[in-house]
Length: 388
Image (cartoon, rainbow, N blue to C red; front, side, top):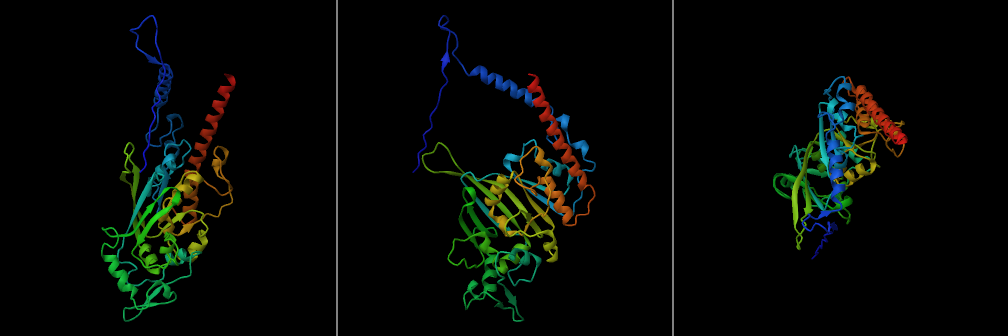
């Protein structure tokens, strides 16, 4: 049992010895009042409700066409600490793109639980067909292990007999598992518990996969052809955050829903992992991208989001092969060439994937002007300090 002790620190007080009726006033009160006054002054600065920028550097009028009807939808997973950052570029994407979904993602505080349900529960549970999703997921992960449906409706193992028992019909087993509440009720097919920094403490799912004696990982799930085919139809992810309640001697957890995301068929994650592939290779596999998932945050924050949301490993990973510096490089540190801002990554990816909507270049122009504003304001502050 863990017992936490909290120590209270009181401010010293001063009083006029000649006036015993004087109210004792902490020394720090004056500082607190000044801070409050400064805070109020900052809050009074007019802020644009649409782009959340100060009115003097509002971005809204710079976007020629709002709500561009992009055929490839975009889902942004934004680190919670990036929401109010003055240099965050997702505000441009929110104004400029119609088919965009913004999800705020918090770091794991104590524990997080993930529930995954299929959008098409029956897909891939009777017998898989070859798909671009299979080819992309198998790239750099594992040799294909699949089942083929013959005329008698029974499954025949093509390559890996170690994925099923010798006398077991995997189609029947998985078909039953898909239509009953096999894990947690409500059609959940994958259930996982995550600790801080990407440590998976529990993982269960309805598919039979050989982990070769290793601890189960999300990467093992996609070695099952039936799992890949089922996930190919899209899925819904619900994240439930768990926090420890303070002030209790016994360990008590409070669970609340953080987000529920629909991941439609044709989704890819823009992330330069070891198994990520380029746009040309993706096209050669005839994989039609319908939804682009992007992580928003500094590289360290994006890495934290990726590691603490292991369901992202179920998706094909896409990389951008661009040899250019971000416009951010003048005012915000970038680790290397090719590391771009969120809006740059979205625009370049959509164009590379064949998005035809007009007006994408204008979003980059708006971003460049936003960077210019920040550079000018920085110069103004430095000039003011020099004069003082």
